[in-house]
Image 1 (cartoon, each protein chain N blue to C red):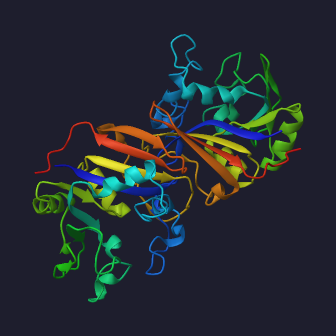
Image 2: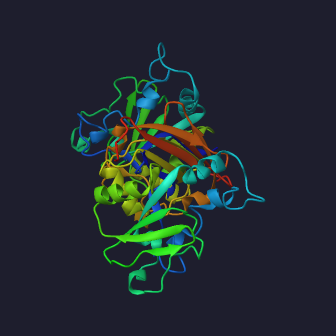
Length: 213
Length: 213
């Protein structure tokens, strides 16, 4: 059982989202630029999308995942905690199909939508991972982001596989991944793959797999 | 005639050198980590070095260059301007073999060493490039760094070819390349090449070549 991050897009200057983030602009001034590589694949557009290395990496997101942990910023725009009717970005059939643990300081009842159930949790990374691992039924746990959550779990030494997608743009401002991660790479082997689309896939694999259960 | 940046190494978090920089540690706490990819090639070690994609890129540094422009930080450690005997890092046969223009607010006489001559210049990027272009005798001008100079010339729209080498380490602090370069990529086509050594070569080519003379 492993803990994984997938399809985590970031700019050359390390931003995983632009600024300011709102309901209309969930990725701020980055718009869709950080995720255009994925939207061009069959993951997003099954009929006309590409099926090259970008799709191959992107599809890994769903393989063998039993639960996801995400940050409050991923579940909704700033202020969603005050809106009891907010049910996430993804409509009535969210694409997760597993339990999803949303880290938030605002407790609310679990929310069942299709075969995804959102649980709202106030917990440290280690506690959240323990709970998610139990719910994952022997499968892997995905750390779904955003950047703050990814960084917290990586710096706590809790992530076994990190797939980053570097997009060759400079955003200048937004949500940084790298703050506080100095030297994190020492615990990992790294493999880099340049895609014809212009993005670079960086895959970090823990040298000594972490036992999460 | 073109203006080029080559072999510009930087960490995942965008630092071209660590901190603090001194005579003993010209790249600060980064040590040799940012340049190990090049030191492993025949460029650095002709007898035992590698001759793969890293060497191919690294060798481009010297091809068709008629002059270099470098920042004061590249010529010497902090305070070299107050030492009239400082003659650069490179010994009596510097590896440039062309005129080199060192941007500094401290004027001094030109310094001839082997077939390299260092000129000390107080000038804007555009002025420096005009002077270096004249000295280059029809060949290209290399912007030699460090990060501040690279950034100043890129943001002034004066660089035609930018070769960056991204090393998969997080430094956490040091000299940033990306500050103020938001959106610079819009003026360039980009090509990415992953090396088996783990670094990624990013080459930016101006969409509309700049006339520099």
